[in-house]
Image (cartoon, rainbow, N blue to C red; front, top):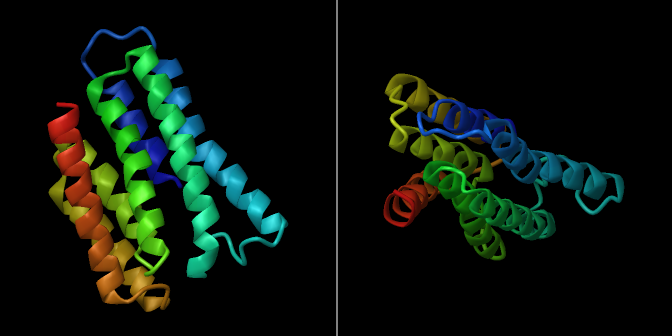
Length: 178
């Protein structure tokens, strides 16, 4: 949940377009991509609806994913109203759409949300001109290997997450927002 605010901060505060709403834009992105999700996970854990903060059990992931899709969709609508830059709107759209796709997949199979959650923002940053391939690839490898080592996912679940995250984000942002 820390990748989204960093990615949005980079996108919002490095944009060269004249925008007097940088702080409001970032606040909306933080609230709808991170804060509400953290509050929801903590609440669901306190109510024993999820067994741990990662929602490791596939069936327990459905409710947080549904709520996450709703939060991101509302954030996207607010960013449209605020007329945020296309890349910022695009990343929030990706969070909404990709979370909905993960929700659908999770009903049958456990794909790596960590891999998707890192691969998507990395692709958005790349499309924004933030080129640090060694750091980006190292981050993806580190997260992926750690998810396999702790037996949270199989290699196929992690690789699928990376492919889905980068592929969906590329097409959504490139063809719908840029």
